[in-house]
Amino acid sequence: MKDQLQALRPSLRTADNLPDRDVAEVVPVVAPLNNISESRIKQLETEAHMLRKKILELEIANSTLDEARSLAASQLAVMAEESGNKSKQISELDQLLVHANARSVELSSELIHSQAAINNLLDKATGLTDENTTLSKIRDHLLVRVNENDKALEKYSQLAPRLDELDSFLVKVNQLESENRSFSRQCSKNERKAVEATSELELAQHKLDRINVQKNEAKLQLKEVAVERDAFAVALRKTQSNEARLNKKLSKSELLNAAELKVGDPFTVEWIVKNAIVSRDYEVFFDDPKVLLTGSGPWDVSLLKEILKFANRKPVSRKERQIEIIVAGRDDADIQLVEDMINARVDQPIKIFTQELFIAAILAHLDPFDELSSYPNPEVDYPDLFTMLCRFGSGHPVIEHLQQQQFPWPDSITLEDGTLNGIWAQVPETPLVLMGYHVGELGIKKGLTERNRCDILESAYCGDIPWVVSDEYMASWGQPGSRQRLARIAYHLKMLIRSRKNLPNQIAARNNWQKDLDWLHGFYKPLMRFRWPI
Image (cartoon, rainbow, N blue to C red; front, side, top):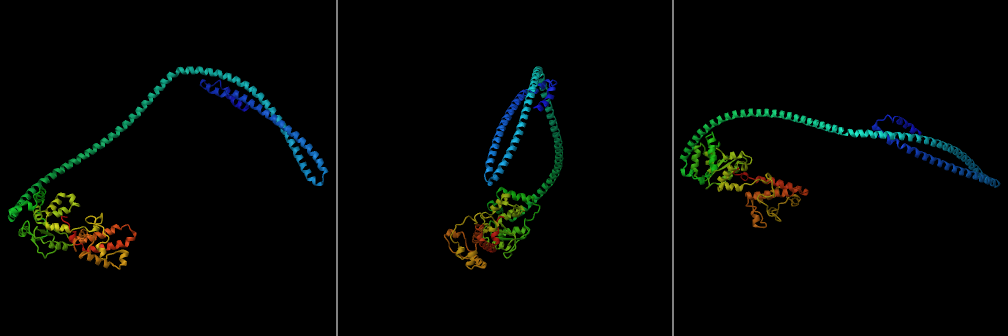
């Protein structure tokens, strides 16, 4: 406690020199010291009482040891009279007595130390009483300082309005600084906008220069167009002259019969006139001088021969097979001859014209099939020309027969249901099964080789097949050797392959079907691949 007071004295000596605002801070620190000394005195008194109690206990223990010593002495006397086998117990009692004496000495020493501690505590209590008196004086002095501090606070309260004004001024200064920073940022943005505007102005100037260049180019093109216009006018006059010469060869009633010629619609007329004007090659549209004519209607074959002769072209005989152009009339056309010509061309192109379309192409100096083939999807990309060709072929017996013969091979298209013309009826056993056609493990059990399967398929295509379920179902198989029969067998095999695509135990069967389908492709004639108008 003395150490605490010694540490506090320098602070007390400087208390008089503290500023008024620090007095309030010193008072809460010093005020509790009086209470601390009084509580410490009470604590020391309590410790002294405990030491007295302990001394009393030591005295009781000492008297107990004296009694034990007397008892041990009396027992020793009794035991000395007993037989020699008690000597060991006597030595133990001697040891106990020695320990008791040592403990008595220790207790006596502790008693002496306790009495010394009590004396020290009494001295400390006396010192604390003196210190308590000193602290009372210090407390009185600090109370005086507190009163002085209250007076200083009154002065401060008088200055508070001035301080509020200073705070308001600082707020305004901060606002001005914030506005200044905002203005600086806005200036930066304006500078960036100015740079961007300058760039846009330069870009606009560049575009203007480019427009001027394009303008000059347009003027040059305009001059070229004027030259071409003059050339078109000359071409038109030559075309009119060619048409006049053709009119001498064609009867006036035949050329003006729009119902038969099928050029009465606005698009056909526009197509003929436009291409006749644009074309600078006033020869006929085709390079091959060989043209096959078959059938009459609406004109006689002799009239078409005269037109070809006028165009420095001549018709070929039926013996000729490698030709590119066939002109078919509506009456008495040899359909078998047309089929033979198509099959003879194999993978080479061949064009089938109606008489009306052929005359329209000659007048336009342009091959409509070549023009249509330049579009990936002509039905969508050039619907007017596609519709015009379909109109020329509408009702024409040769064209409609060819359209009925064509079908896409199943490997070249995406099948939705495995059929060509809708979903076929499901039957327990197809005609192929009844003819002994089997694949996979069942085919091996039946002893069928690949050659045996192909023979069965060939018989099914070229000959009669067993009747199954109904006449309607059998009608879907068509006649022997027909396009419909071949398509029916091919699409049936493709459907079987597709329906078992994800079955691991059907791998061998799928392989057999695919090989048989590839072999069957040998019957897929060019006629069946031929598509009109494209």
